[in-house]
Length: 200
Image (cartoon, rainbow, N blue to C red):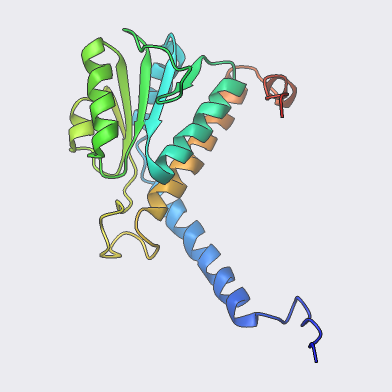
């Protein structure tokens, strides 16, 4: 005999309580690390952003997904922005800005492309946990998020798995920057929506 489905609100009380606890943990960890991000670095970052002819973003894995979401919002704000690796992405030139996202600061593909951009004369903004890393050394500005990189399993900086806290903090920080830019650029919801994709 097939048993009737359990009521949704009592089906998984242990999982539900655990998730609720973990949500509070994640929010607390993000508040902690984002509260330590340098205001001066953010000002420099926004200055490079607004002065750039064009903006390019690069990252791998979940960090790459976060920086791609940032690129989408920058497009909504009216910036000329490209994701490195896409077939329609043009050549980076002098005075363009490359935003490189890597928790470790040593991700090989990101480092290779960032080095090329640096040698071309592009400006470099790096978001990382490791400001003294290879990426940090060639950056015009480094935004340091003091979270664990994915290779750090010590749980010294976060109780979450691998680089989860860094990736979450990157997304939240980028969204906060975009929200601030909406007001400073005199934009509103309607002007952003007019830039949203309509071939969906």
